[in-house]
Length: 302
Image 1: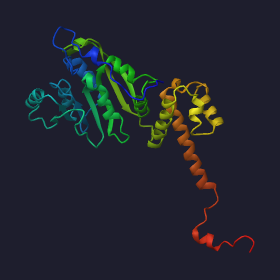
Image 2: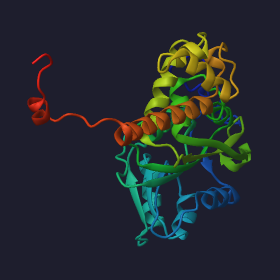
Image 3: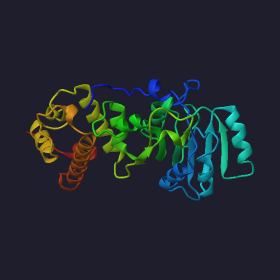
Image 4: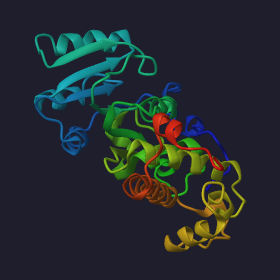
């Protein structure tokens, strides 16, 4: 587990250079030109009639068109007015596509459940992931994204160096579906890209996620402290020792060596135990006195 508390995009200096000798691409925009990549992205998303799909950075519609063919409702967000004009001409009369001229970093996102399918500009990858995955009440259910290869590797590391990525992983499954070569884009970037798959964990409750976040915050705040001592802030030390041992973690191991998945498993166990204790207390404990019963109880010694 890393020490840093924030995610920093380190792709700009490498990936924003086109492979050719053309002008620098400071925005990190590489338009998708390979129909087979578009088809794989859309197929992976499982988009269909009635689904709401947001495409951030629609470009010239390489993903918009195949998404529209699925029958899904597509909101194509594009900042460049030249691309917006072309998109509106291309999808004029298609009731399933709404073209929105806006910045992906600030556009209003849906409140109802939705999916994202997008070829994300490298330069704002972190900002967009933060918008989509950081809020506890986010409505995004899944995402299929084209991002820089190194960025995708960092997002899927079992022990991410950044707290916020660990928080995302606690509530979403992040995986790499495949590598995408530079020739699939125009202009071609100087490095490979990745198809990053994001799926909400449907088996994680809100209380579990909240406890996982507290555990992660403690672990990242004190990365070299023993995992047992970090967990002991929430349960007795002996129990912390037993819980860690049951997950295959050596209790004296540094907190930074514990994968996100283990902190999540611990949060689940602790939340389940708390719920069981609450149920047993209600079922088997003595009845709590009411104000009237307390008034009728004779005082000791009378």
